[in-house]
Amino acid sequence: MIVYLLFMPTKTITLELDAYERLKSAKRFPRESFSEVVRRLPISGHSFVGRDLLALREQRGAYLTEADASAIDEINRADQPPDIHDS
Image (cartoon, rainbow, N blue to C red; front, side, top):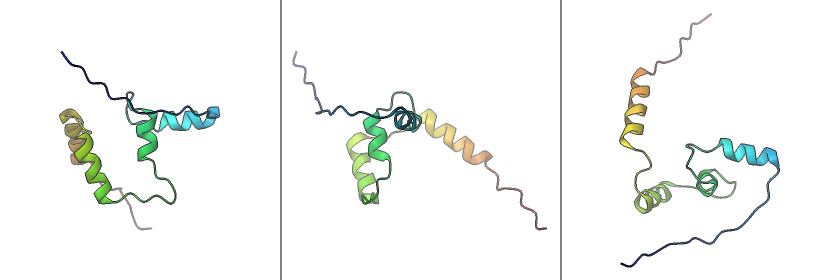
C-alpha cells in the first residue's frame, strides 16, 4: 500500500488576544481553519472576482452539505421583507 501525504508549508504568527478573538469569531464552522478564514476575508488591494470563486469551487468542491443547502433554502422560504410603514 502506498500512502501519499500532502503537507502545506506553514508560518507561525503572533496575534494580540483581541485580534485572535476576531479571527476565531469569523470562523463559519468549528472545523474551519484559520487559513481558510484568512483566505476568504477581504483584504484591501486584493480583488476577488468570479473566476477566483470558480477556481476555488473546482479545486475544493462544494463547501455546503445537502443539509446545509436545505437549511439555507428553508431560511430563504421563511424570509419576509421588513414591515415598513410610511409616517
